[in-house]
Length: 487
Image (tube, rainbow, N blue to C red; front, side, top):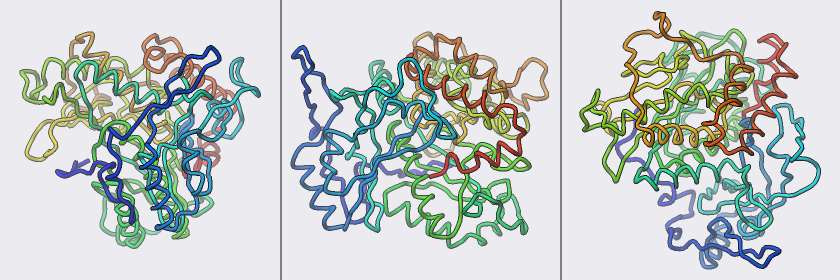
């Protein structure tokens, strides 16, 4: 992934005919909601009345009729509520009702009730209009948070977890930039394969075959200030990849959701389907959703300028060590679906080994040094992530592992400078979903980074997945879930 020298910051960009420069952090305020005992619970930050008035005016000027507020559940599926544009203010301030069981929806829409999450109770799905995008043709979108009735963040909200992860970094003087890559396979609208034709991996021909689609994709992304770095044909037939510019962690995770939305709308208009499954076809290649991360301490890079390997600073080596050492325990967040293990195998450049190495595409943690060919500076790429992951949980877990390494001053393991599969001292990450989930269930680190409510809910929905479909062969699984993670 090549990071652009001049990347965009979402809240300073244009989208359609609407500007977001009215939004500044100082314009946020905290609303107080009374609890039964009379005390106040602070809600998530809200835009002030003047900013909301401007949104109403711009909605009218842009012809917006519907506002979609989306969340990503714990199996990585995007779910949403939609309101008339006139209800945008209420969607932002009070939110729309959502059952707590949204957090235990499964890949087949089954609800995995638990002793805590059942038919009783209500959450509020609250649209974050600070991240609003006007998509055109009367539609606008904003990411949404799961909140309690008093307005406080729900302990089941992945977006709130990521906010806390950013705050934890900031408390140690650290900041992160995250860039994401998304691989996808184009299909017929029903998910069946497109005509085979000829395919050249990374070739020009596949780009020309879908020239209009790809050009429209770039235009649609530009219209909503979704900063694309690169779009190209990938290895497998019908497979393409796009790279998103680095941003702060929350904005980067929002960008993954927005990218799927933009692609999904565009695919429909071109008479196509699109699969973000980790393994769309049994005899094909898998899709990844790699995450790139750079770290700074008081604005000084951690991955360059130091005395360690390739310029790593002392904290930089510990951050990488934290990711490598904790990865087996958090793999259920990064690659926890029933299909993830079919992609996560040696020889597929999927990062199947918990190790690190300079530009090593078989290592789970690929280090990219500060060179002339890397104008944004040094960073690490986590390669084992696939599109069935909730992007907010995946980024939060990545930040948490890096911070854990720094706070514990972990020692960097030896670099792997060749193919890990050819060595006898390295064990591949587990491809069996049961083993992945058991490792996460037994992990005190996973419980601390995710919180008990999210961890237990993730284990519940993924174990249902395993128990219900674990005996199916790969072809049946691939067919069943090909479009599950699409929008």
